[in-house]
Length: 210
Length: 218
Figure 1 (tube, chains in turn cyan, orange):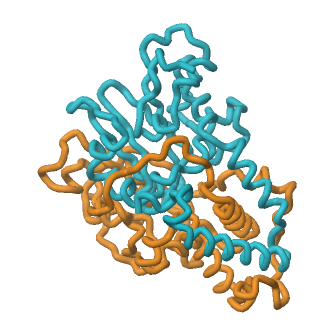
Figure 2 (cartoon, rainbow over the protein chains, first blue to last red):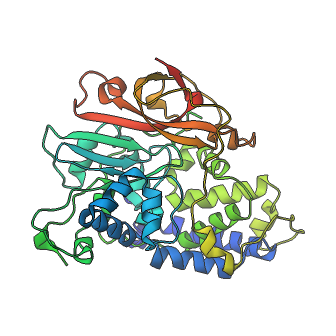
Figure 3 (tube, helix red, strand yellow):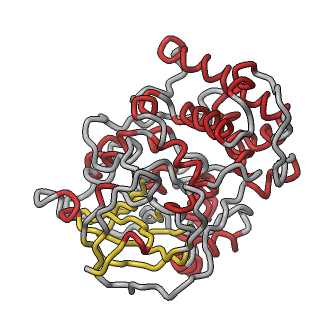
């Protein structure tokens, strides 16, 4: 399972690759010939996901919350409304919820049933988020899962796992790294990783700033 | 349904293996497959719940043997055939052989930006919410053979209502074409020990977002 997406090695899953290529091409041709879909619209959907929808959007949201206490308050109250108000992202669906890490509490997001993920702010989920090891273990062995990411938290930190079982979507608001006083939002955003907004990582420290 | 998709708490799948600098898609067909599925959803071929159910109904051995977008391709094939949108003969031939079914809309290039917003699933409540924040609830022991969003590991467990999330489309009925049937949605939080037993990490709590029909007063 672990390497089921490792298409860099043509020998490993070449059979699925070529089979799926042909299958998906056949499906697209049939659906286009029948007039249900327009291949040019598909091109645009793919382009949007490859270029415009990604964790850089979430990083701006987190950086703004670190820099602006009023925005942070609004984000925790109603993340959908707060993120829309930024105008950075014009495509925020309803039911976005921001959950805040504190020195005593660490939040982790998972979808045990499928792959629910706040893609308006984080982009499409990584392969590991959708795969069996993470989905099975995040809810009963979160510290073990965090160790797989090289993250060890103090033994007395409360761990809260949010299983995304409905159309609500969660984003973690990590703690602002020390030594970043007076930084601009743009500079703060360079510390915000995708994984720290899922809860499987921490932000970069100030010495690692881009 | 008690399918292989309901993975919370299962053992034996091994370590999580993060991939450094992971690309958005690992092959071009993955992007086409995602876009095709989204486009068919937008034109009203099926609801999000019917689509999820389509993945869950793949046999366990097929589910585990295919990559994420591989499962999406199999689901797409199955859904378009079962809804009479295309025939298995056409997919095998790689070309349309029969007239198309008429759909409410077609997805053109100009419609794409609007369709990239996730839908809204909030609905007018048919009745006041039954539970309040802070109340103790027990999840029902249910094993429907059709789609549900109450994971197995949380059934028959006592938790606390932490938040009301509004009234939403009910996946259990939406997935089987039985209507939106809006229901109140709650964040219910459980102690790790309530879910996994007394040797569980005492710092662990787990929450789900649970629809009101899943819950009884505890």
